[in-house]
Length: 463
Ligand code: PLP
View 1 (cartoon, rainbow, N blue to C red):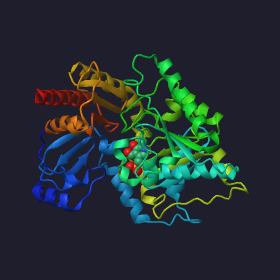
View 2: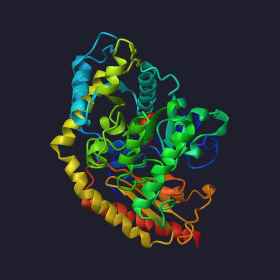
View 3: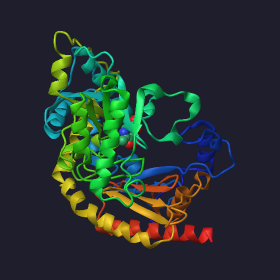
View 4: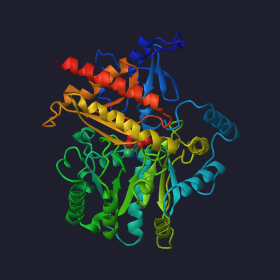
């Protein structure tokens, strides 16, 4: 893609060299920073679904930042809100007995948008800290009811719930949990991911669902319901590989949780604010009302950091009881007034521009077009829902044998995609896509044709 932008102020080679020396990137192997390689690619401009690098090349950002640029990047009306809110009050202390109108208005709006009686929000600075707070609430809820042993967690293989020490312990992605950290393995128990391509192969969705529910109940009985505080689940997996569970799965799991007095925490850090065509996918897509929902990313469309842990009246009533007397914690930047104002404007844009309806209309087209890639030799599976999609690469389509990790097949494809003006997210054997909700049909066509070409070029390299 070519479009003239002025990049004369950038010395790309110098930026890359300084980056390697001083700037450490999340989830990058630190030794790679030392190598004489190409290094990270610097970008300096973002607009809508597009990015420009410091060499002047334009790209379609099919990753939507990091699953987060829901309304698209660099909107003037959001910049204006940031400016105006900052000029009104660049900071207001949220602790104990002080508050501010934008934080209050946002908490009230979230109570309207979330399902059921989820009327209470703890604001955080990220998705990880929302996951963290959800755990604290769950343990406190049980303690206030004299269940002192209910402290353990059920999670799922390949799940991603955060990057603090606690929340990384809840993640089921083994490759992101180096052994030297000694994560909290004794208190977290994992069940299978609803991976229909592999574990679900050869079974009807109903059979696969029954198997997963049985495994879940067996795990509860093995750990002991009296020891389990909560279960975390993403409605549709994010970084673990866009697994969409079989029909009725979430409903079955939440019923089991409630049967055994386990709180169900829906991690909507990725799925909320439109990615599946709803403000929250838990109820509108999957028909469940969780006890707690965590959100971040699309809450502010990545303009400014903010997360939210939204919990039910039922939990509130227990924590606020005379026996409960639970103290909420938080940090300096809890409910930052500028972030809250941005979130409100972001929600207004999603509503005003009918972006949810747009995603419900374009999402199936995106999926259908991506499915055409299945004729390619190394494409094993294409899966996801609406504006959360991924392609899984395999060495052998029949046996589903994977490429060795060090082969980094996802990265190989994504490098070719870069050269064609398309950004996709490589994750070992996957390419993940989560574009801004504004993506049009024409842009879908560009994404799918560029990705096809990138995969074909990779296949040529392998011959
Ligand atoms: N939960 C899910 C499902 C996520 O995908 C992520 C981040 O990608 C998080 C939690 C953590 O959010 P954050 O990176 O804002 O801490």
